[in-house]
Length: 149
Image (cartoon, rainbow, N blue to C red; front, top):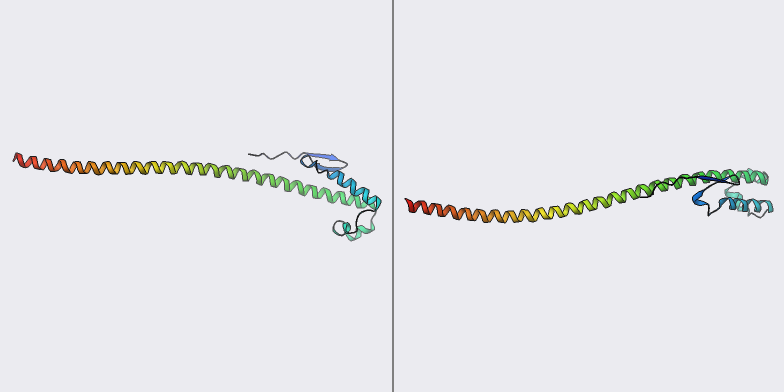
């Protein structure tokens, strides 16, 4: 079963990055955005979703701080989602394990039931044979009693 991984946080350029996500390099992405902001190369639509209308009137450094803060919030949300995912995944693995154990127990019980059913049938037949033999012996006893009288 998988264990919940320890979410250790690294600091890179004043930005928190999960060790599991270092290959994505969000710090690099922020640096690229900062460079584009400095050059004025970001598209206008970027401001529509991310920076409020008042953001158009603030400077590039303030926009960068705003974006970094927004990034940190999103990173925390991502960390929470990753943690929840791992917990759900662990719970799912535990349930799969329990299901497998239950299916194995069910199979074992079915074999036991089948064996007991065949034994019951065997004992029924033996009982019927013993009853017939007993009836035959009782008839012999009755016949012998008649002979003795």
